[in-house]
Image (cartoon, rainbow, N blue to C red; front, side):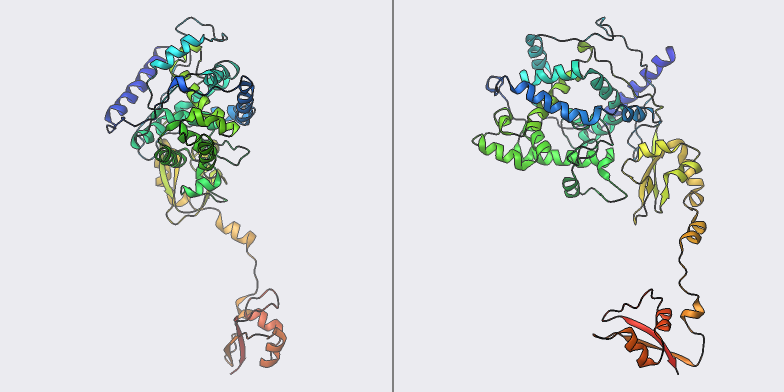
Length: 458
């Protein structure tokens, strides 16, 4: 027990050290004032509508228990691989609620308590409390309590890097909770709308933000590159709308839907006035986000016990790879399992590093870096001789393609419009088979402008 406490104190000390050395940022971010007295109240029937909408959204990520378990058992953690400036140590998972709540007890509070707590929350994002947000507090703290505990537990894998980027971009730190609303912190999450990754970025948005998306690589799945892209996009949206709730709505449903809602709301940019004109999912989006900010501040009061991933945490590093190599071969040569490589490099969807001109920064456990560098040449040498022998198609031997007879000379014939292989063969008094052999052709198809090598008596 003493060792676990030491680990906890050590990790906490390191986090404080890193924070104290970060560049000071100006947190005086302008935010739109939202009056609690002017909150739009919809009809009572809307409560079931917004809850059911979120249930559909959450079910995408919570119904597959095997996915969550497999993710939790992987033996690596996401860190800032480039700077490698943060180490996470095993933390004591034995939790005892300071208020004496039993583990299976569900806790709720009256409106007056919620209002008082929201008034005391300090955030760069303007928070309000109303019955829409109360619905999602109840959802996350009661009906989906297990999901909430898993999300808060998994946050130790991703939040250190996300917080670092937020500091660099001088953005509100509470934006990190969007990843919980978007994907329940599933790096491989994919929605019915083809949105992918922690930040649920769609294909067109990802390409517009400069992310690489092809058959081998999908940077929307990479927590590092997708975080940079998503926060850049959110910053632009905030500059457009001047309000974080409106920027979040635009992130979820697209600026087009938000602009149309603004017109219907007679030009208002108050989210709570515009909300009733937004798509159903977006109506749930901002209240769910604010509910999670609240629950993070008051975890103990709601008896939320983060379920930490059952993983071995250790530092990671990056190595630049310029040649194609499969995860299976790399894992064998580095004497490790393949799963950590898949977990650390989710953007490589084919489980292999593609050949790229500028190389690919492959993330590996730091204790494997020395082995990789010492044996770099051997590691990157796939079983090419066997592969070539098994797949090469031998067309003709050289002496059959290029005649060795010194009495022959080469004529380069340029195919003219209307010419055929038969006509060309008769012109040079050779047969069609010879022309095909000399030019390594599979058939008799020729096109205007093609150049054919033909050997004739000198």
